[in-house]
Image: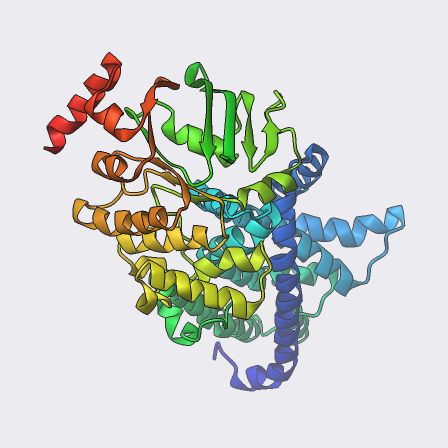
Length: 232
Length: 256
């Protein structure tokens, strides 16, 4: 038989541990990148030229090279210049640097898409540009970006499989270990496949749901906002 | 006894090779209602945007309530951005496209300035917002988002939002031009209330009937300059300059 139930059953515990590591990496790298991406985006739009230059080169370098190469470089090459990272730190830094660069571009696009009239209206009320960004521009940008950001986090979830190259024992790596022991590649990798699918599929459905919700406009959340003064 | 609220001196502004304002000077007194009329592209909107520093003139100066801001000639103003922000709180602006904040409800739009700029306490700003909504006749719409309001309602909220800053002068930049004709009246009605309350106003508009009724002074602009100015009775009934006559006859012939 191609798919061996017994092998699958005995691998399930170890693979679940791997899946937990995958989810853990997704959460910490995702949270870091969602926040850091905003600051990189703002730095890229800064009036200070040096700040734009630094963040611009960072984003360009990350986007022009493969994530796999970035991870290998951080873990295997940096020790030669005295930067020794444990596997988890290397994976965390590598994945976060990568996703932050992409998300910063997403944020920047969203912020720039907010109409000039909104900037004018905020300025005319006497808002400083930092206040206008925080209270008027960014909230509008963020709302339109939520589905896109969600897609990037789902991508991150899948890309954490690359962390296996820096010996992180996530789902993919656990699968490789077991398959190397029992040679039942079909069963073990089918399990790995299904476990990714079990998390990934609901996630993309959720992103699709968010996309639909965004199209409904601001009034949909009114029921929860009926009480005046709650939001302000 | 007159107190100037706005003094514009020798303001010049061009976009590329297109000269929009040419050596423009005028003074607006406290309580004065000034209508600014003229063909499109004559610099009316740019003038209002310069007064609120949304546009930076090429040369000249603008004084708001006695504080002078010059153009520094390097694409900036002679005072820091914080000072500009502070001066803007004295000048309310109403835009042709309303520019309400779409992510905030009507009352939240009105509260935004008092909350984030004036730092008024919650009770005070909410009470004020409610009063303003009542004044513009939209009390029952306070929890509606802009997308749920008609154009006229949005513009009335926008007027209330500007008034919530307790401005010393209000600028209206073609406030009714984006509205359907049957809606224009409700916005003009609110503006009329402000006139009755003694608000200082600069009104750029194509509503000649409104200007004639409420303005103390009318400025006819063309090609970035004042062609003619005076009380409405004089400017509308007895224009001196041929360009004023042409403009008025063109406007009146298609509205009547």
